[in-house]
Length: 438
Image 1 (cartoon, rainbow, N blue to C red):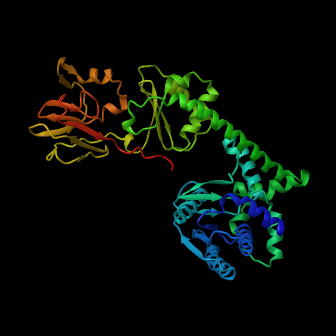
Image 2 (cartoon, one colour):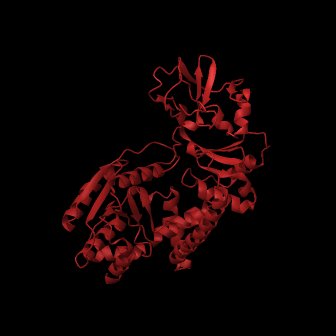
Image 3 (spheres, one colour):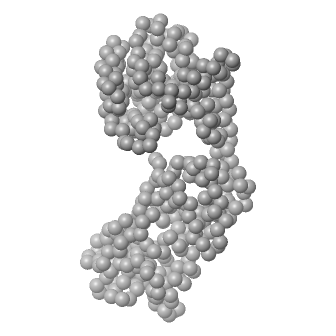
């Protein structure tokens, strides 16, 4: 018991200054052991305030009794308990939807720098590694569950990843504690349950250290993933060197530096860059990257992913999502140019420094537009946009200011966005590029 407490305390040493520790309490063996160990530690160590959170999904009748079980345990241990009831969105994977709803609820509970502590242990890590291995995961997937990661305004921490389930069960029984069993854990039709109940016991009988070794492999893979991340950041530094269109607020990369890398380094860079934006595609779907990369120069290729699209335009890669994937509808008139004009699905436009005389309207490019440029005469808008290398996907949503049928200004393009005297200028705040993942 002392060994477990010492190991737990060492795992949590970097987090001792957190404002509060929240324990994700399901009522099962792992979280029960974790909460009780922390209460024991609290008796002899100065720890942050300790609280518990139970998330009730309402997916099965047996779960209705778990909140009361958790409340009784917390009352006995003098730990405040918050019970969160969530709705699980229907979908192809109920398990995944329940997990996402659960962690969203946990994230909402965390204040700045606070911790959520979960009871996953070494056997869970081994199971995760084997599960992902059989699904064909790469280095990132085989790194298993991280010991910590950001969650909400704080962090999720798994302090028991070096402890086996047998050790936790021995501890709980010695302390006279009871726990709840999820009936769905007996369903070996679920892949993880099959691994846990049928496969890992067989492996352990032949290789007694199987669980420990699998968990060690996850640590090796996490180190390898860290090195790949360092390489990706070096490659990204060379590709993210152009801020000409920084006002678009869109993630983008220079294509030329990327093409100078080997195929493996290209994929490594893109995985690292896309990770905060979308779920990673499987190996076969990466053919979409090759099609985009190798398309003809005059093509406008796109690679559709779960959270958005990757496009190639004017020598750069651009990530688009949210409103950027739909063609906006232009407003018909600008009745009060002194006030900003909301553009449906396309952000906001405003006139800086005043406004030209006459009835004004905003439109979007349809083709064939021309504009009078001082000292150059009348020029086709298409040519003017080509001169400034405006990305093709931006051209159809750039606000154009008209007085009657006269094109007066093109938003945000120096020399085209207003009078040369600077008395007024058309400014456009593009739509937020809503991310596929937060």
